[in-house]
Length: 251
Image (cartoon, rainbow, N blue to C red; front, side):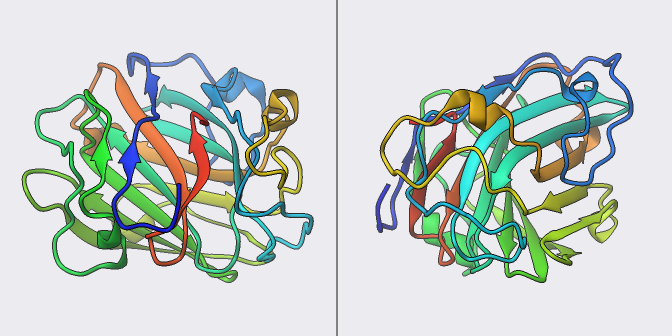
């Protein structure tokens, strides 16, 4: 995707029934601690990043951004998402769109007011994907800023959920803004996808990445859905008008 204000989103993944899981308790910290919690990756990156290859494990590098794989499990009243990868500390952001199977949602993105992510207004999602929620995670080296947009009707409503304080690119907040949403971030990854933009990614390397962005979302925030949930994850530039080629699924 290029520098333009209208995008067309085609790529998404479907999470199965949100039934109770037998997996162990998930600790939201930004590190994939064991396969017993999440199981195999739900989706794996297929293309190397156009936003540069991060080669620094400092956690505060502006050298590159990439998405490697996504894992998920529903347990104890939460939907947990682990997004393996890394994000430049230059205001770039990870955007997560969720369609929870409830009525409403948007097929053409429209965010009210003038927040930064309204730069994506007019973007079209693929047929059958009408997200109800959008989360944005913006990295500025010492803080991961988290916003939520409720996507319903003709104008979505944005709110700032809070910040995750980072030290060396690592931090967590277990109850962001009193919402019950937990966020963990570990930005030290240098492996997985590389900077050979447009070439095929190595799936084995992508699935080996164990650091990234981790979310715990109360099922109540998803309408207590027990059906399938659809998710789209992408990386955007600091002004929300320059998408990278990093989607999960990949191109």
